[in-house]
Length: 440
Image 1 (cartoon, rainbow, N blue to C red):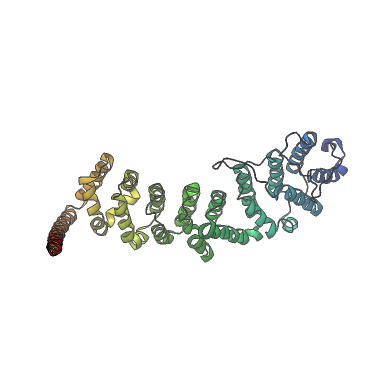
Image 2 (cartoon, helix red, strand yellow):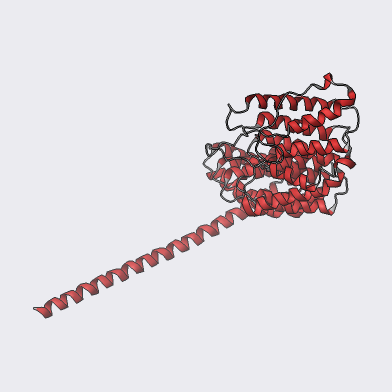
């Protein structure tokens, strides 16, 4: 058993009276006593140790939840200080290493207490009786940084509480907002460019999704830089699947708030587009569809050439899910309208991939979808379609001629090599005969 000062020792640990059993004048004093009692931290590695005391603390924590929830007067500075002290000694701990399977997350053994501590703190932060001016002295930048460190916890239950608490702090303590955004930015930087290891990226992105949703228009330059420097590079790590959904939501929120950012976002996706990871490529295509839905014609035209070169590569993918997902873009009416309006640029880029797919792709579903898209273009602009077909046939003919020339050259080189080998072999045999004749 540990007291809040960290020293080991035995303490009188008894059940305190309930709040309903004391007069109002003594309730705050009793609240302090209960907070101090809950500042003793128990070792949960031995389930048989301090069983009675652990249960007393659990019940006392539940009483604190009720007290904070039902408070009907502003919390004094002394109360704020003691609450922050109690939650700090319980939450900010050094986790003991646990033997575990490689892929299994570590679940905190102290969760029966820790969960209620988080609940007390969440109710305290959310309470209308918590005065921001008083509390910001104790829930300061150093405290916020410790919360951000904790969100790397392997325990998903703890991360969920921390996500909610950090979001509440962001909403309530306006003075901390720039610092919280900057600190999350720093976590992302370290994750992307140094470690590629962090358990709480998805939770941080979920917080940001709500924050971005509340950004006033026009967007500040600082917020746009956050998109470019912090969010877009998050597409780089191999573990993107762990947090892609909230990341995609954040990115799309930016484009919906300022359509001019579509070009920046799409070029960012192209920069980090996966080369050898097909499942990641499907995720990129999913996100691309959401971004394109919010993209206006002017921004689309700025990036459509590199974009459709990439889509052409996706159409040509031997991985059928990548090719299929790219072809599904034509099922989206806003995107198809953008393609129709800019077909004179887009079709010449896509045509070779469409034509080769229709003839040769191994997957029947991909061939069928390709023929549908091919027909859309053919019906929409027969003249353009025929021009592209003629150009493709000419290119194919030239490629065949070039291939034939190279094959002829290789054959000639092989023949010359074979002839040279034969001459050398004959010369060698001749030398051997000469030596044999001399020795006789």
